Every structure is written in structure tokens, then in C-alpha cells.
Amino acid sequence: MIQVQVSHIQKSFGNIKAVQDVSFEVEKGEIFGLLGPNGAGKTTTIRVMLDIFKPDAGTVSILGGAMSEEKKDLIGYMPEERGLYQDIPLERCLVYLATLKGLSSSEASQRLGDYLDKFDLLPHKNKKVKELSKGMQQKAQIIAAILHDPELIIIDEPFTSLDPINTQLVKDLMLELHEKGVTIIMSTHQMHQVEELSDRILLINEGRNVLYGDLDSIRREYAGHAVMVKTEQTIPDIPSVESIVQHNSATKLILTEGSSPQEVLSSLVAEDITLDKFEIALPTLDEIFIKVVKGGSDLNWSQLKNGNDYIIPRLRS
Image 1: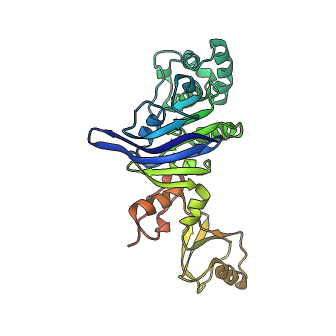
Image 2 (image 1 turned 90 degrees about the vertical axis):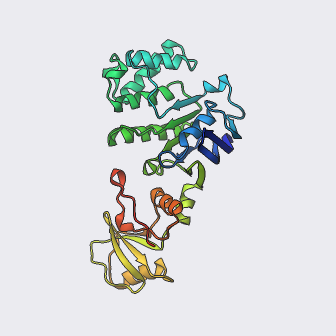
Image 3 (image 1 turned 60 degrees about the horizontal axis):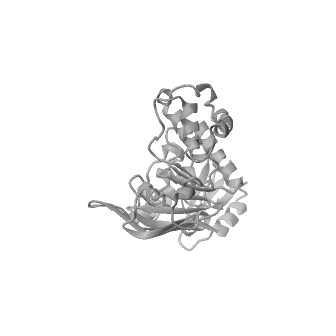
């Protein structure tokens, strides 16, 4: 069942074309990644979906048709900008926002306690929102988006200001909601954070679709001619290997043209190399995006790092 259908939407602000041609569908119960760099048009696309902005062209169907006031109560939205009332206590703020989505004050308060405890905000519930750290306010915004048990959750840059522990906490929460059948759209420029959660993604740049579909299929389509191995032994010279690159705790073997991973494996076994790991090297979304947008060929793998220390690789000419 399709819960969100966006077809060829466009949106401009004066001479700025924020969204030029974006189309995608989101199926019920999936975690869908809406990805792209800052300024790609992700937030504008979301606001068109939610009927905050009217599209200049194209159509949107959400939860089976056009947006309505009744449907808004079935949707949880966390904007990129903080939208909490700053001068009132946290608990009061979150309860009030939940009542706008149809909950009674008593029901909202009852649900809120568990979430405040989960996000380590219970000791801070009586503090004014403006007295909380940026990370605490980010967690509070996430609670505001899910407290009313929506069918569809749309969160824009959910990991902003979160440390690794709280980032993992949010990921775990998204997986819990996913298991309950909630549909989730996660929009972020931090592609490495979402690729482990999403089954399908849309990657946009300059307001247009760049990549769309099943994540595993996309990664295999753009896989380089290389394998990843892990061994305690020194890897000898192998005719079918063009170069060897240390890649974190493993080693990337770049294959020569016309050779195959099976040839490399046979050569390593023949040299009595004990392998703890041997697999086709699949690129990350960051790597794929750079390759597609910049129009390059093979990526310089030695320039890559994982996580927050990611370095944009140079492209070989």
C-alpha cells in the first residue's frame, strides 16, 4: 500500500528553483531515506508534501489522497528548525503539542513519562525549554513528533546536535516504530546515518532525483572492481590485483581489468593466506553520490574515512 506519492513536483522562490523535478513513492510500514546535501531541496519537498507550500507543478498524495485537517492528526512531523515553545517548561510544552494532535492532557501526560525516561529527560521536565541543551531540545522535538502515535512520521535532520549515544538511541527508536508498522521518512544530509536503517532511498541534488530505489541494488550497481579482505598475514603480490589499500581494519584489493573476485580468492588460498573476511567491496551512499554527481570514474578509496570524520574523496581523471 502506497502512503505517500510525489509526482514531478516543482517549487521556486523568486528566481531560486528549490525543487525542479522530484518524484517518489513511500510504502506503508517502511523506513524511507530522503537524502542529499544541504540545499538539495529536501526540506522544501517535505513542506510541499505536508501542504505547507503549494507546488508550482506536480502532485502529492498522502495517506490516500490530498492533505486534510483530519490527516494531520495521523502525521508526526519534526522540522529541521526547532519549533518548541522556549519559555514554558518542557513537560507542559510537549503535553500541549500532543493535545493539538487530538490527545487529552491526561493521556498525553501518561505517554510522555515513558518517553522522557527513555530519552533521559525526566529530570529536566520542569525546566524551560530554552534552558535545555541543543541535544536535549532535539530529543524533545522527536518526542513531540511521535507522542500521538502517528501512522506516518516525517523527521528532518533527526541527528542534529546528538552525540553518538543519543544518535543510536534515536536509531533504535526508529527501528521499534518500524516493527510496529509505522511509516517513517527520514530526511538528512548525513547519508551514513540512514543507510543502515532504510530499505529504499531517494537521493536528490539541486532539486532533482539522482538515485531512487532499493538501497542494496543501488550499492551493487555502483560497486567498484574490488574486494575487501581481513587477515593477520601479509598479502603477497597477486597478478589479478592492481593495488592494495588499507581501509580501516580491513584491506581493499583493487582488481586488474578482466580479473574476478574468484581468481583473487583462489590465489590467496593457494598462498595459504588465512582469511577472516572476504567480500565484494560495496560503496557507501556518500561515495555513490560523489561518483554520480561529479561524473567521475573510480573513487580514490584511500581518501575515505567512516563516520563523522568522513573526508570527501578526490576523483581520478
